[in-house]
Length: 177
Image 1 (cartoon, one colour):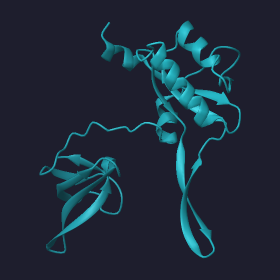
Image 2 (cartoon, one colour):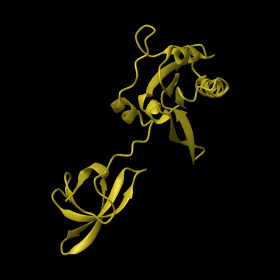
Image 3 (cartoon, rainbow, N blue to C red):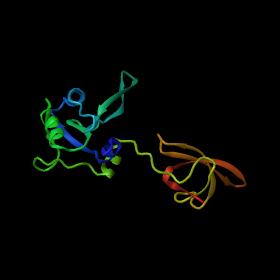
Image 4 (cartoon, one colour):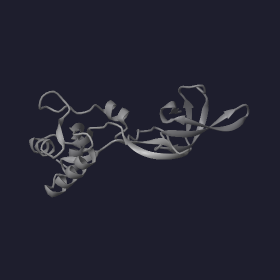
């Protein structure tokens, strides 16, 4: 089995921690993974954060806050050893799941949590002719000008009222002709 194959088997698990220990648990786990050479089993450790705008003394200030306080997400291949290592890390109270059997997150849950960047397989590229599948411009034909994977948007030049107009659409709103 190649390492590439193994990372395909890896799933995201939710680890419950003492409140306020999320970053310590992440740092401890990263050290353990390195010290025990467990990179083939534990691939990623995330404390999901989101930016929050606070207004203090009339000034806007961006701060980061934990999306799921008390939880750390770990992408790993579940083995007896990887389970044991995480379960016995200081600050960890256990895995989320019934009994001692952790339940991995579904792909849908991972997507909704925004933990992992998904780059959808697109059947179109810049310069291709496409048809808009949904939204107010449904059935319009256009040419792909730009694909922005980070924002999950695509800019399409559509002919409207006799002139070319650039419009921004979701990646899933168009289809190659």
